Image 1: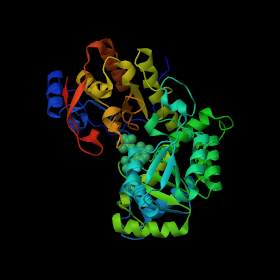
Image 2: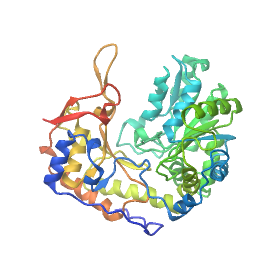
Image 3: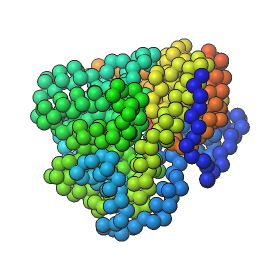
Length: 458
Ligand code: F0G
């Protein structure tokens, strides 16, 4: 089995966590109507709901926070962040936003009109929702391999170039206000995109004069995978690789809550001067003055430091190695996952683990509940609860490709013993898998139902 990568840091501050009893967990679940989003954080032992905004900041980030400048306009904090973004992303302009979806909101407000299409490998759900909110059509063209959890592909987040070309030909570039790609591709398992693929995508968008925006939330993990896996890149630094990736694009949306290792923050970057000026007007309307966006000066400084720490190669080797350690450990005890492990999370294949639970009884939901009951661990269902919808024309239920439960690993937060605990918990769940039963929805909201749905065990 893979060895655990020793942490390239030591611990200076700790936060107590505790495991409440089985009976207390049972009561907490019932109280939350069997939706793990409804649980109180203090009732959770290991929280793998998301890697977004949940990481541990460093002593240097906290020191930068103390030195922040809270001036309304022209703060030193802004210029420190601008210098960092300039060196890593090298776009001409950027505006700070309170998180990634605020950048998506501004971009969509400025460029999406009803009926226009925005292709990507796979849009994240907030990106999709922001495009739809403006009447646009988000379209996904990830390679076919991504739909099969058992296939190994070094860059399973890649765009299907043939499908993208055909789509632009059929739709017409005038109906595509911008194109995107998500690195790494969260929706299909945190899978990376190769530089070769980014180059091809860029070439196609540019040939058709379609502005190209990268969803860059986990760009540093993506750069590390390129260094490790793509021929010709093993001698390049992650910074060089990041520069090369962003030079292919016209802009980026960024959630700093991921690879900038902050609890809040993001930005929208672009080269186009006119677009930047229009974005500033939107920013002032929704977020704040262009030198702070929706953030405090201290958030800007924490992000300026965190961006460098997130790109550090010894950190990335540990980060990606920790996720792979969990993935290999689960495979070793017979828990099916999306292979190969992604950069920020392990995605358990609930359809293969619980084949006796039909999709309309939500195998992923059943597994998410068992994880909490058995070990006080919280993951998130990314299957039929989150993504199934009835076809507007036929009324027939459309199910997503996979029934997954994501275990996202917060950055610099949990240790090897915690990962071993997760593996041991899933080993026990695996042993009694046949006795696990499905769920019925008793309440659901019209949009994004997984956050607030209520369930009843069958
Ligand atoms: N793009 C991707 C690929 C994401 O994973 C996320 C957030 C966003 C955009 C939006 O950023 O949350 O700062 O507004 N993903 C989190 C997750 C929520 O759990 O994967 P945000």
